[in-house]
Picture (cartoon, rainbow, N blue to C red):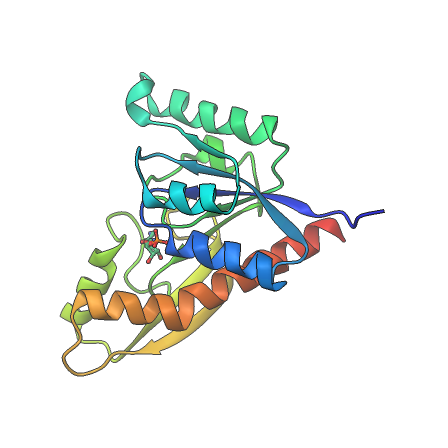
Length: 202
Ligand code: GAR
């Protein structure tokens, strides 16, 4: 009998390099306790959707503007998660903050990757390049990435893994973003995902 695997949904909004890292980790066996069963984007035409399609992963697009309020948008996502029997939800560059009614429905089942060492440069308003702009403006010499469980506090849930990355002379937000992805995010997101899936199927 095939081994049981946790079913993973990845929520995306953009380029999807973290989604790609998860797909690659599944192929290489770093993720062995879970399988990516669904990719949901809240943006039409997100390149992440193409990455999913290339890997033959089912996709769905859920747009906020199709619903009268945030609750309707989140209920539509929840319905997809239920229909697809999802166990673990990975936020991989998903640029929408989920409400408490959503996060409390999946305690310690939603994980997020954030491009700084939490508690620095995190919380509402800190996303994407803005995080790296803030780190450079402050003048810190070390930054990194964090994978954490998602609860009702933006970037406030229990930390699963962190990895530090050095800031170098002459860094721009774009250069730093790329280094943090390469040296931290694309490594600790798949590893954390495996850790959470393994603990669920045990
Ligand atoms: C990543 O750097 C991710 O950590 C960040 O957005 C980027 C998405 O890139 N997420 C946040 O800032 C969430 N607060 P990707 O679409 O190529 O994975």
